[in-house]
Image (cartoon, rainbow, N blue to C red):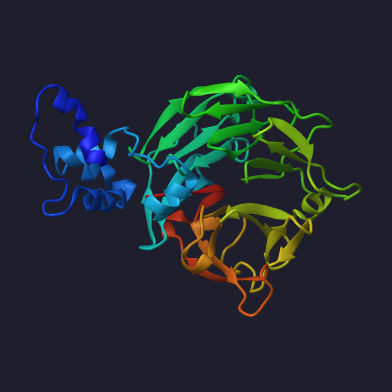
Length: 378
């Protein structure tokens, strides 16, 4: 059954109604595929074309959204890069969206929690649902004091708007978070964690991480796990701590030694692989090899020098044509380095090479400092 037939099912109960074609002259299945590739940032405009288009683009039927990340890469194959950045003058959080193909930046509605301190809140994208969650954070109060908040704002690509989701059970700031198995996992420095199910709209407690506190340096979700590392800290007297949350067993384990000691940058996940952009030197790209428990250097140059700190990184969910993977590095002024990672011809199976190109941010973005980046699909 096509989605259009599903949308009309309710009308048939009230009497047979005339079914207008989505696109005259095209089979419904073909027309649906065409509409699925309309950029979601323009859906509000597209919904005015006809009642049929409006129902198709807004209805919450089983066919309306892919059920898994794999389906998302097939049905909704056009990536949009979302960059969260602070304006140095107003100190307010903004969210901009880049279409990597047209290289156009699109201003999104204001972020509801735009007053939180930079880096104090978590941002988690759910690409299969077309949603981004901005979670918790620390806000200033009168008299120079600060307080952590429980609030959760959610951006919906289908409506190009923000709403409120259920708040966390505990107010938190400077936490680790990521999408694991279609749910949002949040872990505080104190070891307490909770999980948000977007289907039910509810938070539930997760296993408590034992041991000493782990201050978040970076975190990444990959393969049903959330990885949290505190990174190296001056004067480097001890190796960094790291933990791994396993969603299937609701349990924590210590991070492998090679992973935590070699995690020296910001991590992006692409095509099921974990990459870091090294904080030192030429910002070289490294990939984690689980079999060897080591971060392997990716051939090719580092992030182009014209992309300046601070930066945020993100990766496309699946592989692009030819088995390649794509990494985005968003720098100051929202200059973006787009890295395409591919296998080295004639090399070992795990050998890779990256090629970079730069998308310059508009002149009016010169004062923006990025703090997070996510990829959604349209």
